[in-house]
Length: 225
Figure 1 (cartoon, rainbow, N blue to C red):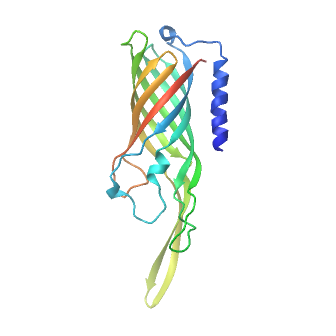
Figure 2 (tube, rainbow, N blue to C red):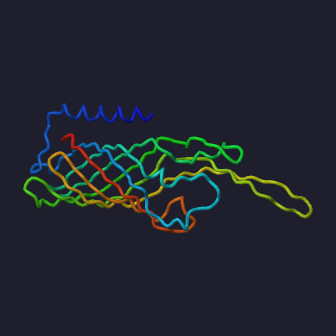
Figure 3 (cartoon, rainbow, N blue to C red):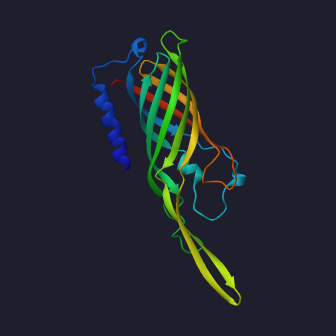
């Protein structure tokens, strides 16, 4: 699956390079543009005091801080304002591999899956350089889609002199909604941006606490559709 994602990414870039329509800053109003991006997410920032201590094999840092590949569509309402949609893909850890370890010592690979993120955003571009521009982004994202898992909890019940064991199972996931804030530099077809995904409601914590995921992104504008 990992190699399939990489191959799809490069096929998309190759297809775009053969397009005849060019990117023109002065005439982009009303245009829809396609771009592709590698992205790297740095170790998240959070208060470890509120991490759930229920023994479930979460791996907060590894399941969020990693590389992702994405494609995006930007529609320019004006020369400066644009609305965008982006879809990110990554094959990464979502559960720590400790379920099948027997005894006091041992090792097991982490569980991995295809994780997807969906982003909507608005950009405003500032033309303050002769050949480049600065842009600010505000958006909203659905993070970690596809991280479903089944959870089983076993507990004791006491009824008079009898003691029995009961269990409860449920299906959950590690997805969450986050605000997307970033600042970037754009020149011709190339964009370089740094920002954060910020959320206060995730499945990682017992209490409401801020979860911040910094990232850097390099984008290539394939062209006008």
